[in-house]
Image (cartoon, rainbow, N blue to C red):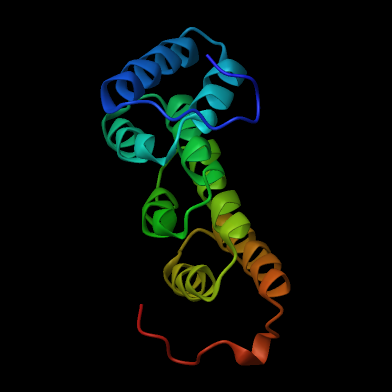
Length: 152
């Protein structure tokens, strides 16, 4: 479809066609082709990726969709990534966490602080804390700058 690293701007019907093609590739086991193809499409593919995530029963495909979404890197996907943190599939919620770290902003920091406070699973809490440290380092805010009592 495109050389790796080039964003492909297509009309909406072509975006949907390319999206469907890459989803077939993913389901056929060619994860890399699917991922790189989805990343190379312009941001107009993001609603399709999010809708596919919500209807996808297979965890590995949901993880691929989450990764493709965050690899586009718009801050507007942060709420979706927080939602995907709750996914039961380990690979999927870990991809969401990777995306939040990649987006590193005060919004992702604050949201992850809330998620850490309400998360009951010790393993996830450990991963969330590590990611929070990475976000703080990326935006160069020490621990004491975090808002106390942030409403979650």
